[in-house]
Structures are given as C-alpha cells and as structure tokens.
Image (cartoon, rainbow, N blue to C red; front, side, top):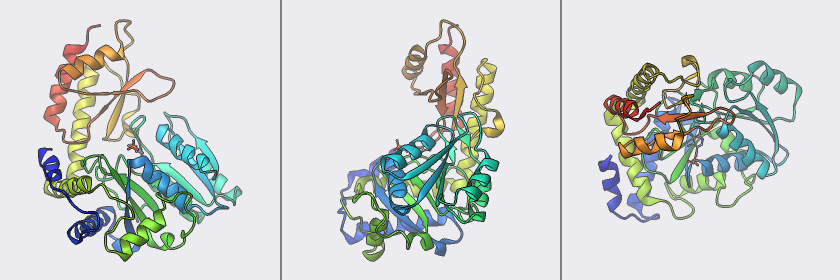
Length: 349
Ligand SMILES: *Cc1c(COP(=O)(O)O)cnc(C)c1O
C-alpha cells in the first residue's frame, strides 16, 4: 500500500517521547488483537526478521537445565529445532513429515514419560506447505501436563482469528511483514506475564535477550534497548490502522479465505492439484504439484508470470516437485482472477 510506504518518509528518534508513545500505542493495539485477557499477557518488540524473534524466544525462555520438544512438519518447525540445537539446548523433535499433522497421542505419551521436557514448540501455519496445525488441541495436552507452550504464529497472526488465552499459549510471535501487511524489519513477542517474570538471566544472547528488552520497554515506556527500526515501526502503525479500517482480523480472514478459494477452484479448472487436502489448508499460502509435462520447468513458468506482474514461490517441500502461491498482503480476489488468467496464458504443455 502506498499509504504505508508514505509514512516512512518522516524520521523519528528511537528515544524521543513521540516515538515511544507510538510504540506504547502499538503494543496496546497488538495485545488487544491477541487476546481478550489483556491483563495476563504482554508484548515485546524485537529488531530483525521473524526468525530473530523466534531465536529470541527459544534462547530466552528455557532454563539452562530445560528441554524443548519441537513438533515439526516443515521447514519452520525444523528451524525452531535448529535454533535450539545451535544454542546447545537439550532438544527432542517429533517430525510427522510435511504432509501430516503432529501426532497428538505421541505428544501425550512423551510428556508423560519424559519429565525432563519443560517446553513444547509448534508452528501454527507451516508456511512450507500451507498446513494449519491444531494448536488448540496441542495446547490442551501441553497444559494438562504442566509444560510451557510456544507457538510460531508468524504467518497467521493478524490473518486468522484466535484468542491466544483460549489456546493455552504462553508465548507466540508475529512479524511486521506478514498478515498485518507492514514492511519487513521487526517481530513482536506475545507472552504470558506470569511466565515472563521467571526467565531473567536465561538468555543465551545479549541483543536477543527477551527479558531485558521487555524490562526496558516496560520501565522506559516504549524504549528499545538498541536502535529500533523507526521507519518500519511507523509503517507498521499505519498498517495496524488499515487493518482496523478493513474491519479487523475477521474481515481480513474472510478476504484471504475467499482469495484462496478462488485460487484453488481456478487452478483445479486448469488441471493443477493441491498438495494438501482442503481440510488441512490455511488461507495464507497454497502448495500445488508441478505439472507432470516434460515441457514444464519452474523457472520458465516463474519468468512468464513475473513478466505479467506476478511473483510466485518455489516449492519448499523436500521430496515432491511443487510450487506455492501466497495470497496475503494487499491482494484481493480480483487480483487472483487476473493471476489465474496469467497462469492460463503461461501454460504451454
Ligand atoms: C515468515 C516466517 C518466519 C520468519 O521468517 P523470516 O524470513 O525470518 O521473516 C517464521 N516462521 C514462519 C511460520 C514464517 O512463515
């Protein structure tokens, strides 16, 4: 949106009161989007892309003797495990494969048997495939067994209605450039206050110390510890206003869902097959099998669409030949119809 980019033309100071007021306002708005129980949760903003915020969480919330169980079914679940192992945290991974949901019975029995596990992590919308994971059912099991629960909600926050308190979430995370539709540059961590007060001194990194960043924002009303991406934050504020204008998360979810439906119907008419069954599918991004024709190659297809003004994603699934089409952002059902026409013109097999 040009309006979002336009507000970046003014400069702001990281420590200035006007800027800090904007940050505080933003934290309050994000909190209200996340839950009705605003008194139980708190928001911390963190510099960097979404992965930096995930690393901040993993590195800051697990005590030295803690152990993390990661439920992985794609690249972003694998990334949580990789971060954890890189930080020398005791890590166990349940990998259900990219086409299956996490195994809930195995989760339950593992939590019963392995008393060393202190934390459980799962991705909500696994952007690798477009799969939506059952974070409600996982949350119930994790809470029943008294463990701390983290969900990477980066690709769904702002685009899929949820109340994180109802989901038993202790920590979750979003980033500036996904469903809130700002520009890239920072992430936001939503945390249960009761848990945050316990994590002082756990951080395995100085700049990504979640507790310290939170304490600074609380003590000095909206102050980040190190230079904050001021222009990006201002743009994000504008994006939040535009989300409100659109009618909030419910309305945005309706738009994404109808775009995704039109996309899948149109693609099926053109002979494409989706990787996932419809009931596993999020309204965020969709994976399609590549056509079997020998004449097809992704690069040509990509270039043809790009020349018509559309950029698609390569597949991220390891063993199957796929490509992905995302429909979040300033994209409307009419754009999807134009895309379908461009795809029809680009198929040559
Ligand atoms: C986008 C995304 C991230 C963060 O990726 P960055 O490239 O660091 O912005 C993390 N998890 C999920 C599920 C995502 O979709």
